[in-house]
Length: 291
Ligand code: R5P
View 1: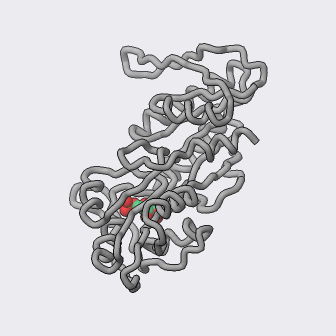
View 2: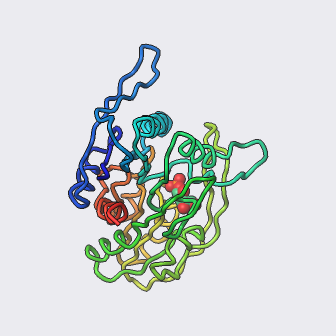
């Protein structure tokens, strides 16, 4: 019988997935050595070839969370289980190719590490590297991409009634195509160096006319909030009501405060827990692992 093994910060989601799937929850202990290294020890060590769904959110604190995930995958594999990584929000997904010479191919490095530690496959939700639902093999690892876009859209409709779905940039086209979204704000320039050394997006947009209708701006991820703030700022006053939605709401820095200024509702899922996590991905994940 498969089991769910939650990593740090995923206890709530694990319980919801367990309720829907009927799979049990198993535990592990995470300790730190005096020098800061992590020590993982499973409570159950007798898997006899059972599939173990290791749930890890990977945000915040992506880097430590990745190490915890890799060690847990390895511990399950060493104990005779078949580890499947379930990562609702997959960080490093935007570094899904080599944009410039000399860069690390971050996504490749992380997926290869999961595979090397023993993961049979990865299940994730709306990853930046694959905007469509389905299975693919990436760097030797089977990856199943699920999508929460319809659940988010349906929730937004239940709150606002009829809405015009708008992509904040051309990059959101693929992500929103299953929802038959045809309205996009155009033009997006990629990275720009900021004075503080961080990389950010610079965008300029064409604003379509919405004739006073309710507008839902939707994207896969809100990180610094720049993309959404820029789009929402231009829409303010053009639509009757502007809502903002995404699957992964990271809401870095004061982005939530800025977004609230230009929108009436903010909606995200619980792939990353926040005050805006109004839609749960538990059922979407439970359906996949119960098949
Ligand atoms: C980019 O291609 C993504 O789909 C998002 O538009 C972007 O990552 C959002 O980032 P931020 O909130 O920092 O603008």
